[in-house]
Amino acid sequence: MATDLSPNFQKSDLYTVPHPADYHHPDLVVAPPHDGLHFWQFMVAGSIAGMTEHMAMFPVDTVKTQMQALTSCPLKSVSVVDALKSIMKADGVGGFYRGIGAMALGAGPAHAVYFSVYEVCKKAFSRENSNNSLAHAGSGVCATVASDAVLTPMDVVKQRLQLSESPYKGVGDCVKRVLREEGVKAFYASYRTTVVMNAPFTAVHFATYEAAKRGLSELSPEHSSDERLVVHATAGAAAGALAAVVTTPLDVVKTQLQCQGVCGCDRFASSSISDVLRTIVKKDGYSGLMRGWFPRMLFHAPAAAICWSTYEAAKEFFQDSNNPQNIT
Image (cartoon, rainbow, N blue to C red; front, side, top):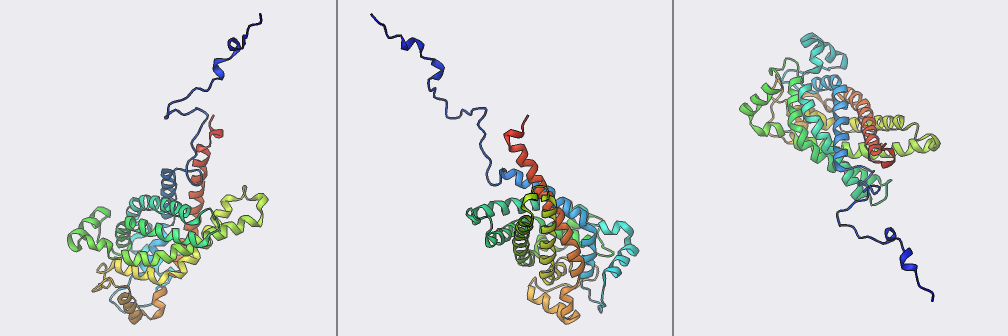
């Protein structure tokens, strides 16, 4: 009589074996969110990009600050050459780097916040439409409101140290004296102006960058992967230059508020933007609102190129490290 032997030939390793809820197969990799990166990786990439940008362009920023500082003395036109000569005469080459320590302390954390908030908001606002310029602009505004809260106190210290014949010995001395003589509010006297300035700056900057990057990539799509660094740098430079020129008047106001009462700079009764604007126009005419626009543009065009190319390179590094196919 025939016997059914099929049960004896069944392979136990073919059975479906349930696994615990926390079990992860070694070949199963959970994809990181947005652009293939984790939140902390956006922060690290942004921090590296911000510090690289500000350290590289710091001398130009010093020139711009000295050109924008308004004193109680009768004003004369201050050119880039005049500012360069003044800094060299007063402090030598080291004068171009006074306050760089404050920027080093502030730029890393601020840009970590800046880029991570931008990426999170871009994902939320774009809703799968990567070409949404309005979403890019809105994300930039959210990013700058958050990052300026981190950077503004160190920016105050940095600008006071950048002034010609600054009375402060260094970052620590400046922080202590401002706290003792003016209180904590002095570190945030320009915060409102900074946000009002950086909101349109960042909106123009991010929208221009994303549009320029897309346009440049479409010019030669077959070579886009080989020219990514050039595309990021060029798009960043264009975005930085345009945004810098458009927002120079508010940057002048910010500098005046942060440097008031130091080295003969005017002190204002309030931190009202309109009051400071009226004072500048009264003493220096409407041209005073554009003081320092050229070094500001010279700063932001290459700074943005450095920042964006560094940021995108850091992102690419993390994307490769997150890709299991690149793990050997």
